Length: 473
Image (cartoon, rainbow, N blue to C red; front, side, top):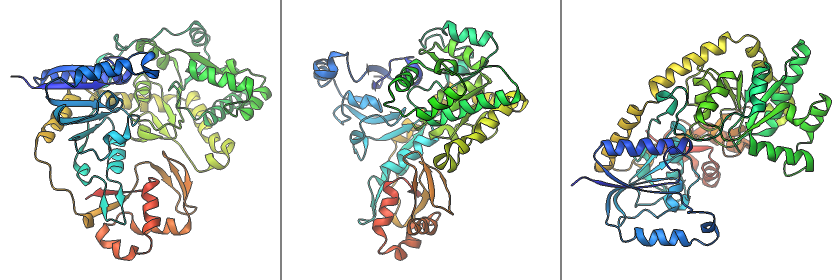
């Protein structure tokens, strides 16, 4: 009798990037010999958000189904049904991001393995699951050092370089096509709801000024998602919920309107998205939301458009240096945004004027993507994860052998000032905190623990803020 796998996913097959991954996972499991049944969407319609009658009816039916051999949840699919041994003999959770129900998967003995789609999310998951309690000399889930795997994500553009036909959306609007045909300098920042708009406005408006100073009269336009545009437009008119007074003053000084600089688009078909990337000269990913993987960023590079970013989330790790993603961030961006973002604008302006360097970098990025993010690599990494889940788990590492490391959320630490740039929250360490970090990073617990007495609360706070983590050597 073939093995049976139950899938609990938020995104239906090919409904966006997550849905494309979910479809590949189901196809891989079928090729391994599993019979599949699947549930999608944690909320079954608008009415269910207020009165979860449809959810209750679905759960009522699921409770009587026989125990499956395997259950795989995505992070948001955990809201469909709680993992349990009654549901499946083995359980995996696949993290597209960290938006699901954390109390459902943190320290849950019913979960046998965790899968991440980027090295960044893998390391963040490990740091969360193994958060120490220093007073008790233990980690929340010490077995998690060996139960978080990286699945190599399959990028649809590797199979379909002109855009996957099953990933839906709309066509490029006429006003964007006109700007492209007119020879405007096009950029993009279309990751909906993720941008740091203070950073984006500083960069795009400084680009306008650099162009004028150089005598380049071409308009510089930035394509963004229409929902972000509506949010910004409302803030420009009403003065809230975002404080856009500085951007409004700068636009007035340049005698520009918001729509002269920003071009709104709906969710695009992948074919149309790639058409935009091929026409664009730069992408911005100066975001406040940590990027779990970075489909848009990689697809931009794949199509020859470099991306400039603060490196938030996996953006600083998804391609090697010099492959089309340019990470530029400094503490000055926090203290003096106008001066801090000026070097980014200058670099973009120079790259647009002399594009050979970035074209070569994007070509290297494209070749790396073609070699790496393949469906076959995804299937093989999934196969190895399932093999590990079926094996007896190794014993958890000894407390004394664990090594202190900077947390994966930390993007940078200035050892002179104590300023920390972090995906969790930027902060500034006091002298005692900075000294403690310097003292322990790179060393094992057993080596330094005797000298930490009296500093346990300070040490715990560093872990709780994501500054430090422990790693199994």
